[in-house]
Amino acid sequence: MIRIDYAPCGLTSPHTHPRATEILTVIEGTLQVGFVTSNPHNRLSPRCCKRVMFSCSLWPVGLVHFQRNVGNGYAVTGMQWLLLD
Image (cartoon, rainbow, N blue to C red; front, side, top):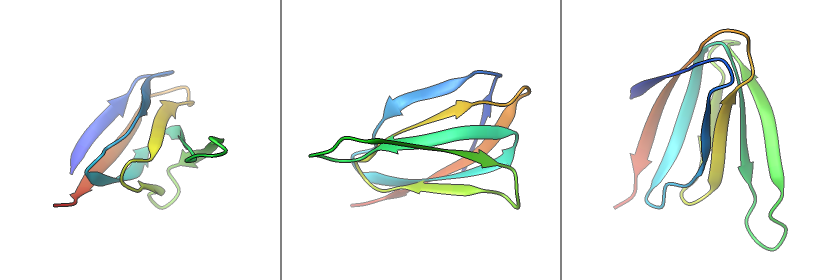
């Protein structure tokens, strides 16, 4: 597991992990997390994660996703990846 600190308005731009599933746990602050669905609709599906009993998000292999700090202070997350080989 790794720790990522997001500055106010900080973000991780949309990206994928072609060989791993990502699990994100919000430890402190508020993040907007979201993903873009696969073809044919390509819809954006955002939601907010606050630190409420360690809110978690999971993105399967290859899904385009992002994270953005929407709070006033720093946001802290723990991330891990489940590799597929």
